[in-house]
Amino acid sequence: MKFRINHETKLFLYGIIAPWIAATVAVAVYLLLDYNVTYERPTLIMIGLSAVLAVIEIIFIILFLAEKFFGAKIIIEKDYVKIRMLLRRRKFHFYEIADAKYSHYYDGGDNNNDSGGGLFRYVIPRDDYPSRPPRVRARLTFYLESGRTFSLNDDAYRYAAKQKLWITDPDIDPDEDVKLYQAYQCYCAACRDYVNTNRRNAEKFRSSM
Image 1 (tube, one colour):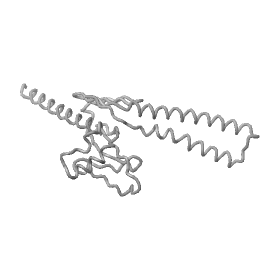
Image 2 (image 1 turned 180 degrees about the horizontal axis):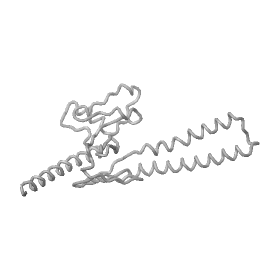
Image 3 (image 1 turned 135 degrees about the vertical axis):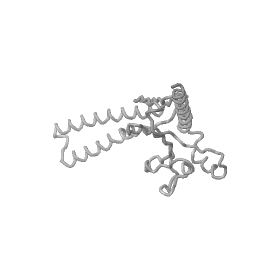
Image 4 (image 1 turned 60 degrees about the vertical axis):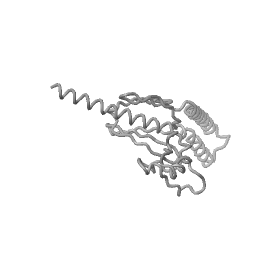
């Protein structure tokens, strides 16, 4: 099955912010050293640096908007997961994946402060954001047998509203509209079938010996 998610690559956002920081530092150094337009070489360097930073800014803005428009795609097959992102393509066979964890995080907050599985998947403390409601996002992390991890994220804009309904109606799943969660559920089902099939094949092999 195929699932299209609104994945956000932080590198693109950092690429938009970094040129402004670099430009601010360059201007501060330029003024600190008391250069002016009569100093030809430093001025040309500043003009060249500004042009380079402008090009970098434009490139990352294009990448950021393109990712917003196209998103990412997760394809779940019977024995592997294929991920198509804007600039990356990854494929993980089930035997390469040691574990997978679905969680939530606050966008702009402490991304390590995830909620775990089970009941606590639906409980996210809000004390750190008293002035405005936080934007909750979903994250799916694959833990590979090699020791590496690979993470995807997605919008969970309806999660907060359904979380309140879940308190009074446990039959409601706050994540049911999140595409990343649907992909996670599909992966879990496919992985169970994969394990059961391999177990049956192994038993058949042993019985035939």
